[in-house]
Picture (cartoon, rainbow, N blue to C red):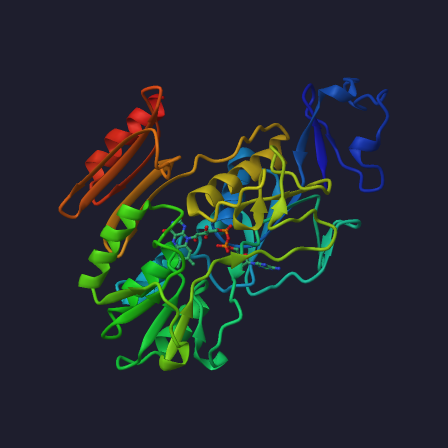
Length: 390
Ligand SMILES: Cc1cc2nc3c(=O)[nH]c(=O)nc-3n(C[C@H](O)[C@H](O)[C@H](O)COP(=O)(O)OP(=O)(O)OC[C@H]3O[C@@H](n4cnc5c(N)ncnc54)[C@H](O)[C@@H]3O)c2cc1C
């Protein structure tokens, strides 16, 4: 229940039948006579659906901002873990326990109630209930699920990589003599293919268009990465292949977010600059959101949005203007950095290839507006500081 506290005498208003917001403007504190404007939101029931990085960041931030708010974090999974490191679970370089994000009692010590293995099925915004749980404010942090297009292949051969359960299944079924193909050549597809070489002799990747990782790499950067991958027994194939020739097909063709009845939705749940959805007291953060047409699908953005959603829910003042689209990733052991509008082919462009290193800088009026760097972290850092100076 929402409670409000008088700034003058610390009297706490709590009345389930007459919410504080519904009191008329003439209301006075019954203890000291201070007027209604002297009351601050003191505590309320915050419910967060989704125990990924967006949800857990929201919970931690909400606690940091308000020690009284009651926080429930609901996840349909059995643990809170680092999704990015699922790749290392495939290659066998980490154990399951190393994947966990927090020590067992950390969230408990923050007085955050975590409810595991519970899938919320019914969102009743009118009565402010998710299944049987009541909320004053709700943060949707439900993430996304793998998108599997229609493929001409036996369904039993298809695997995906999104959850710890998916990877346990993959590790169980794929034996070392299996023929494996990855469909999709974005960051996830490349990382999965490279990790799979620790299990099987070689892996093929089926790619669309003229390059791999098209969101982060220019054509030349992509060519260099393809050469690196070949040395690691990963073959990139741009033509169509017969998927039935493989024992397993790992589909990495992007993700989709599920819509929820009454929440405004396009490709994701639409949020405004205060992380609010179209429904009062319902916020959203992370991979499930769409902000000004953008869906980021990035760990750092999910974390940032989770914290901002909590800030908005708790302090009710916030201005989000989108996240800076900058990526620094390690794909198959190779560092890739990109920022801004790097994909231009005309204008003030500096492009240098030196053995396995590569960079491209795009400038406008002498200032960097975009860049991509492969295998050269020092160059990437120099470019980033110049880009930030503007
Ligand atoms: C293998 C892999 C590698 C990646 N590598 C990178 C990388 O290098 N860099 C990068 O920036 N990003 C990477 N990503 C993407 C990154 O992991 C995501 O952007 C990030 O995890 C999104 O966090 P989220 O909390 O918004 O959503 P999610 O992590 O999807 O979490 C949402 C949670 O909500 C739960 N949930 C959904 N619906 C319900 C419901 N109704 N009731 C209860 N619980 C529910 C889901 O099961 C899930 O646990 C990678 C992703 C994968 C899978």
